[in-house]
Amino acid sequence: MFIRKLSIQRIDAEGNRHACPLHWIDNFAMRNFTNDAIFDDTLPRADGILEAGHRVPLDRLQQAMEDWFRRKGYLRAEDHVEIIELR
Image: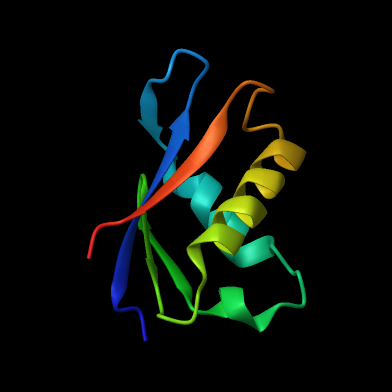
């Protein structure tokens, strides 16, 4: 089920990449009750690393994570999230 390995990075105002901490990713995965079963196929692994199934659309995941991180106060207004499939 968790065949894809994803890099989850916070991009700051200067364009520098920072691995999102595991507790951010875990908080999203465990508490993002969107009633959208599509995000059930995710498994946080490490700082900046999330495993996911093929049915998880990266564009929706990026938008949902960025929204969640902003609501939690993890991201500043000028920051954004970048998700890249590693395999």
